[in-house]
Length: 139
Image (cartoon, rainbow, N blue to C red):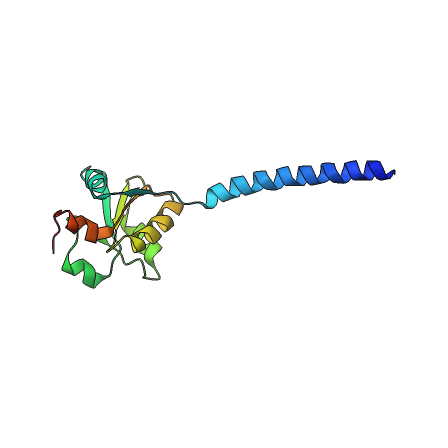
C-alpha cells in the first residue's frame, strides 16, 4: 500500500467512527435525559386545577404535617425507596405536579420521575413561593 492510500483509509475510518459515535451518543443521550416542566405559582395552580393532575409533596412527614397543598400525596424524596413508593402511589398516565419547600428537592424528584416516564410539572420556588402569593394550604 502506498502512504497516500493509508492516509485516505485512516481518514475515512476516523470520519466513519466519528459519525457512528455521534449517532450513538445522540440516541442514548436522549434516552438518558429526563424532561420536566418548571412552572411559576400561577401556572402550577392552573395545572393542579385539572382533574387529571396528581399533586406530589416530596418534603418530610413533619413538613407535610405543618402545611401542604390540598389533595397532595406525600413521599419524601430523601427516602431511599422514594421511586418505588412514588410509583406505587402515582398513575403514569396522569401528570404529576411536584413541589417541596423551595424547589430544589422537587427538581430532584422531577428528574427521577420523568426518567421513569411520568409527565412532571415542578413548582419553582416551592411552597414558599406558593405561600408568598397567598395561595391556599391545608394542615
